[in-house]
Length: 114
Length: 112
Image 1 (cartoon, rainbow over the protein chains, first blue to last red):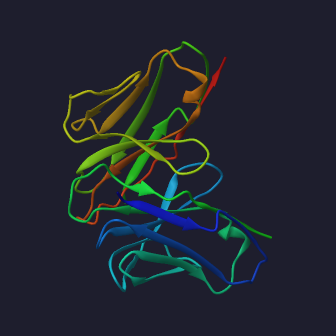
Image 2 (cartoon, rainbow over the protein chains, first blue to last red; image 1 turned 90 degrees about the vertical axis):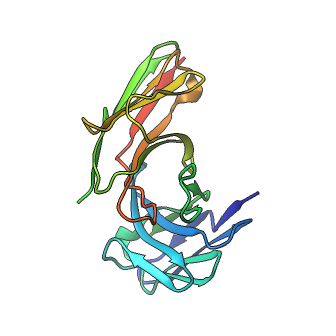
């Protein structure tokens, strides 16, 4: 069966520090991968999605970047965090090209920038 | 630009009450609409709707889609405290990459 792992669960970082959040999926190949951010317990905003290794699409211009160095690995990064980067970050995957049950989400990372 | 509006934004009820959550959307190349329940962490999948007028049911929860009027509703009957959560509506559209556009969510609080 497929599983998705996301870490760390919580993170407190100072303004100006770098960021690296990692997400990996097991039990599937060539998944579509997504990074979402959720502010203050509200709706999710799509940040990046990827349909293959090295293929990244950005939905919202911002201080963050994403990379997909391996088929089932998706990384969210920043060189210098801003206060506004605080939020709940969720990684999700979906089987490519299949009308399935929507996304499966990771357990999320709660980032606080201080 | 794709838009999803959920209402109400928050709702407080007592156990046993019935609630109706609303979701209206404008999405390019609409394919389906999904409902998720989010408690503390990751949203969990509830329903995927692709056809108008066909009600999906799971226990006390049911949902229906109207593709002509571009909205969906989620009903919860005989609410329980465990139903307290954020309910998120997410239409899927655009390319085949399956991007979901999420609404703001409805925060449901069920008191004993």
